Image (tube, rainbow, N blue to C red; front, side, top):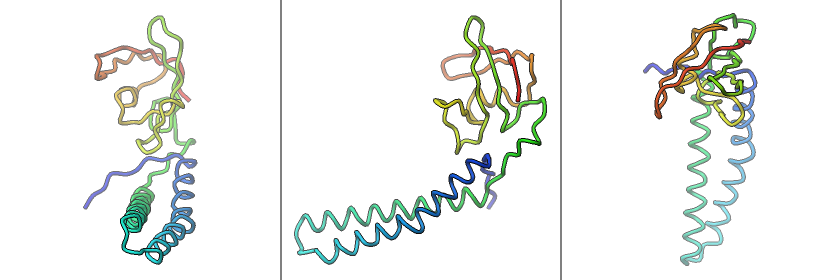
Length: 157
């Protein structure tokens, strides 16, 4: 089975690793304790059944997230800043401008780290995909769901 790589910055990798460690060591124990208490307190009432079900659901969620993080980290491809050149690639920070608009700054990251509100766009997004491979000074047409638009690349870091 081939899996696609998870593109991560060093910071993103460390953040996911911290979350995984927290889920394995702290959260897993908290949920197990909650489930144990719900089973001990069970008096065959509706409330006890609901508490047991809620604890089991939470346990399933935590275990699912642990598996998801393990897979993401196992397939991680770290983005090294020193490997970046003039051409836009994952890890590049790009300043772009549409006609008549203020310049906008984005960092191209893998889908897992995307956070457009904080200027981190996915390499799989329409804008991220369109910018990849271009250089400063290029005009790029972006095919977005609401129609196409053109941006000029002002700066690449």
